[in-house]
Length: 230
Figure (cartoon, rainbow, N blue to C red):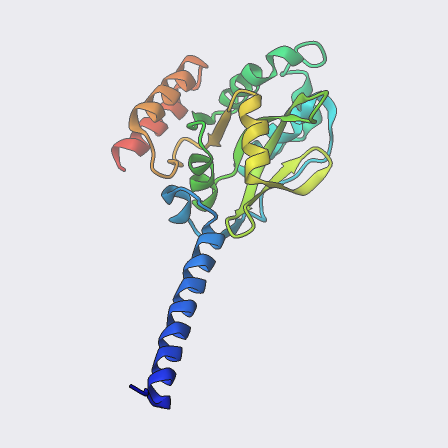
């Protein structure tokens, strides 16, 4: 039985609609890139332009990265002022520990984050820069400290304040590999009244206890009070 032009037009329309739906689905997959749901729920792009930057590569960029975090909290500081209390030069092997000790001496809560990219970017989306340690270099890798100050989910990149670069982009996979290769260490340096996004109450209280043991009992009390009013 002969089928008129209207039948073939109808078939063509259906095929075009199916093709369009397929392209839309593929487009959605490419933009999310198989990202976990925790990442997909975050804003597509965030950049914390106000995070201070101190250029320099001395001592694994540790003093510069810590100075950025402290200055973000309103502390008047430069990396050079941190060298001596960080016991540099000479204590590079203890830099990760000493940076946390020194941040507490400034009255800040050092709040550790889970070793998961979504945990880091959740804080950045909330307006909080994240202090991280990662391995720089492929063959002769060495630890380096930096501050995550932004990300772009569509481009699968993060933005680091690192070394000589105020805006150093790094793709998600490269960063995660370099970061976990250095131990997956990441912390917030918060004022006692500044609760992290999706705060873990026990983790915050433990961080407040560590602040009290550092001699900052008033700041620790403020941190506990901030949580009780949350």
